[in-house]
Every structure is written in C-alpha cells, then in structure tokens.
Image (cartoon, rainbow, N blue to C red; front, side):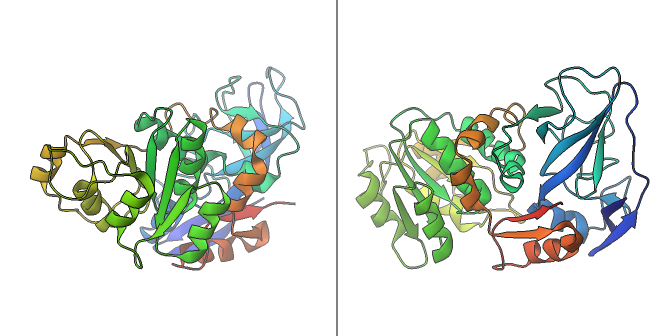
Length: 338
C-alpha cells in the first residue's frame, strides 16, 4: 500500500509498504481523511523524528472506517466511522514519530481497547470534518486550561484552526463576548461566520482602545494604563507581539492562555505581570479532550466545516503538504481518500 514518509531534510516521499492485517486483538482501519498540521512541516524540515529520522511516516489528524477486526475485538464493528486518539497507539504516536502514519491507505490499531484508541461517530459527519477531531481536541484543551466561567469576556489571538476551535469551545462554556484578533481579513471574516461577537485587525486598529470599546474598561487602582474588561486572553498566533501586548493590556486578575508554538524566546516585563497578578496557563496536546470534543463536532459539523480551506485527494498528498506549509496559501488543508 502507499504511505507518505519524511525521507530526508525538507523531503517528503511516497513509499510502498506492506498492507497490515489484523490479528486477534487488532483493528484494521481504512483511512478516509487526514488533516495537515503545522508540525508536519516541522517534522519534514528536520528530516523526521528519531529513531525514525529519514523514514518517518506522516499524518496525525485522521478519520477512518473500520475495515477488519480481529476475532477477540469487542465494542467496534466493521463499517463503523471512527475518529482516533493518535497518542494511544502501543507502537508509538501515530504520525508523530511512531511506526505508522495516517497518510497511508490503512492503519493498524494494535492491542485494541474499547473507548481508548477509537470513538465511533455519526455517519452524517463528512470525513473531512471528522478529521478535525484531533486539532479541535488541542483547541478544547487550551480552553479548559484557562478555566472559563459563564459570562467571561474572551479575546483570542489568531484565527487559524486552533483559534477558531477555541472560539467554539469558549462559546460552549458560556462566554458572554468573544473577540478574535488577526491581521488577515479572510480569517477575521471566517471568525465572524463562526460566531465571534467582534473581530479586530491589529494592523489597522488600536488594540487597547478597540477592546475597551468592545469589552468595557477593566482598569483599577492596581495597575496603570488602559486595561480592557477582558477576563481571558488566548494566544493561538505564536508571534512575540501577542504576549507582549497581553501583559500590558491585562486587567488585574485576568488569565492568559498560550497554546501557540513560539519558535523564538519572548521577552516579557515581569514587573507588569506582577502588578496585574496575571495567571499564565500553558497548553499542549489533549490529555483528556480527544473524544470530549467529538459530540460537538457531530452536532455542529456544518460550523466546523468552515475551518477547512483546502481539500486534496490522497494521490495529491505531497501537494497538500506543500500547500499547507506555504505562508498565506491555506488555512486548514485536509487530504481525503476514496
């Protein structure tokens, strides 16, 4: 069968590998869709992940159909549509340094346990939307780490897939007002279409003044300057100006969540952070959220579908990877299988 591998620094290639077949406690999945993540470009750039450097299978945002099951498998049936916990495979992280990747025609789930690696989804959910389950779990974990309460006012920096997924998560948690900040008009339009109360183009507007207009004045005697009434800020952008802006804007006692990957060190004024008693919450992965987000995707798949900007057939997977890593070309790329 065909599979996509990192075969060298900045090189992705097709490989022909044996098609697996399930033994007694294994499940064979026929891949139906797989999203492209920013980390795929990173894995490619460094030539793969040790110990599989130079031969690393890619793909960790999958959706699949159960093709075969072993004789000892219970709790799943052939033909079921499933989303996948790529961190629960016993042969390593699926598509992130493990033995298999989801940009393959088939994937084998070894040591299957009901409720652990797979979750059955409604057949009405399009495959390309089901493939959003993994990144939306990342977004939900970021939301959970900031401990939102009903009525909170939220500002999200970055209207990419994680930022938009967080928008959905904060709305579910009862946020009263959500602002999305970005510098690209098409991203801001998408945020509005997905339910943001307002958007701000930080290249064209004064961020502090605009947020005070939108979320009220949160200034107190504790700290000097202009402080919007925002309760939670979330960095899903990963540019240094975001944390540097937030520590200046944050009202006393607010929360700043960071889910974005910052590729360079960021300098912060700790005296300002100290005065505001800003809580900083870091977020990575999805310890518990991988299947918690699934019900919302099932119920609101038409909203989640707006996150996807490009789809490619599996035979064009190398083109999909190239498109996804090119700045400004695409927002969310998904590969679909016949």
